[in-house]
Image (cartoon, rainbow, N blue to C red; front, side, top):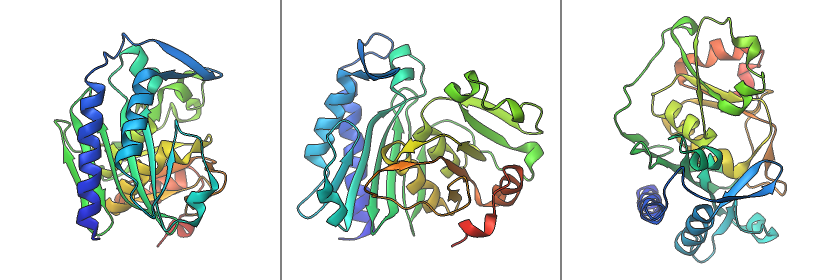
Length: 263
């Protein structure tokens, strides 16, 4: 099976997810709380169950947010990692900054992914060696320096004051929901960088990280090391992603040893 076939499977999965979500109205969806203030809706479950039945084939593992995890995936070379709705809080509030995220992990590395935002009609699909395809109306960026950069920040983190130290920075900060969506926009050249310095589950960020890798961008942990995927405890301490051209300046801004993220 070639990488183009993987992309076709991802594209088909996103098509199906969009059709499932068409049965729900963002902003008019009831939600329960899984833990803390983390909402769950019938839409999350519908997409989760549909893609769980569609994506993994014989011999492939899976890690889906709304399905109980199992150790079997740790023995698989290929693992599908899916967040059926990343940014459920925005989905419930009717803010058009949520997404469906799909990633294919091979031997512990994200090699193909897709993220779509049905509210805006945007879609980003890509694979290592094949680049990233963007569908949508958002204009491209391409900062020559940090002073021109567009950096996407978590709405929740901004609200909690975690981006306060960057408020006087030379770049433009744009609060945006869904970390998968933010990562995908960086991969597609629609933003220059994004980062979260708080823990994220693999399903939150794998699809976006796959796209950044496919674009030739820089995606590392907050200490500059390369993330390892399909781990027994699938929780990362945070994630930093930039376009290739901004890696050095963002590394210096965040005091990250850039050399650790090379290769």
